[in-house]
Length: 331
Image (tube, rainbow, N blue to C red; front, side):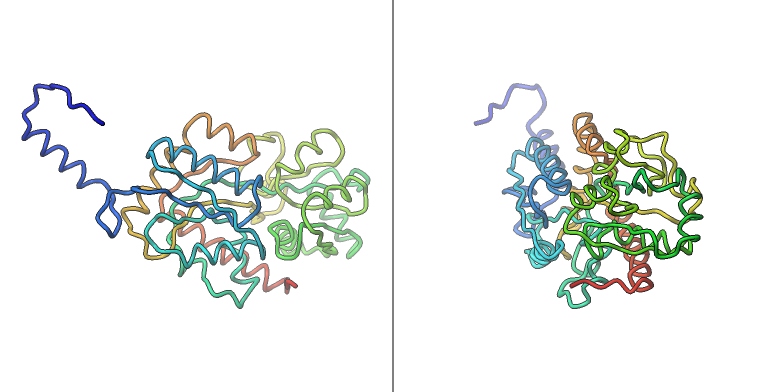
């Protein structure tokens, strides 16, 4: 129950101000101010991963700001396709949104041509949340200490080096396919079921190198168990400021990052999409959220829906070319 205090302001002025405020509040099709009930963020992966952690960090702050529960709904399976299809088919009212990833929204439509949903047609971009650079690392036995030395060694020893990844079509796999195409080198891809066995075989010397998410590999490089050569981001990673980007190290065009962002089903009200986008950008600037994301080895971003839409399309085009040129297949 709310108490109206005496303010000395005429009731007509208060009524006019209230009406103006309501006119600026995004509403759903039912005419209610948004949000008027719980919001669901679908995560197409298992709990405790980066996608899940980011969704929960943002959801918690939305709950605090809006006074409505924001529930994270984990729907893993089929490299993110199960949860993504669920979100694509949800009622487009802004109460079901998806934490999209590089896999779900820049790779899978090319990698799985039979999908019933489309990353562009069936979604309304809200905003880019975070970037996670891939880091190029080699085992300590490999006689290279720079990207240029790696390229020279690979060219002198075609098909001798092996690069591991968490699976066919993963950002790790495609990062190395892009590396090979840009440098004219030949190496053998070894797919695993997850990053943990890749790391184990890399530190053990069973495979030569990988290019995968920085949070997994940087601590082991800093401990001297493997050797880091470069990061795949456009600028140096805050977590490893002394490590050059791949472009600085001699491979122009090698931008390889995992990314995460929020999307709504297509035809969601634009006013609701804009409100979600502004709230997400605000949350990402909060010191505790910024630190939590940075501690994951990720870079908080925040963007407009239009900027995010352009980013998604550019990523789709980039990885489509890599997938087709390398003949990548799943299954």
